[in-house]
Image (tube, rainbow, N blue to C red; front, side):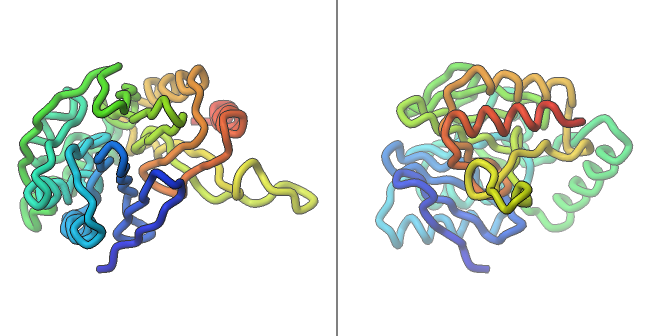
Length: 248
């Protein structure tokens, strides 16, 4: 497996193990890694940091899904970084065990399959959580924004100095078709989307979390899946309003 790495912004590295895998973001000024991908991705991230001569102080996990925390043990062991997550996700991270995806029948089936995967293939492992985060906490100047819905303790990480939001799976991005007459939507034809229903712990909370983002000054969204959205504050607002007006 090769690691995809590129700079969507001058002060942000996007690290990804494959097009279908979750995104990880490295912030060199803050020496923070946001999420750690799957197990093999964690090892590749450590190799990348060593090769580039980049240090890491904190690994912050937006939530406890295996495609975001699978690589966490390798990252923590390989760099000596401290791990942090929301206090509602901490029990799952510490045990290295999946949570219930959603109360729906499909969510329960997915959770059962994830549990079987953990028992058979051990895609992640227990992680020492050095800090349990809550709304408003700051790590190296990066602010915690509690965005429950996809999971109870889903968080976004907000950088006030730039307006960047690292949204985890609370808000996803996807490629959208150009508008009529060949015009392009906002920024690079990227639009926002909800997590699938069976991957939502609580749909009402998921919706309200996105409503809350409308009240923030967000210049760019770096989501857990999909390409970064660099449309500026007005573009972010328009895309959020379109999403919130659609069925969820």
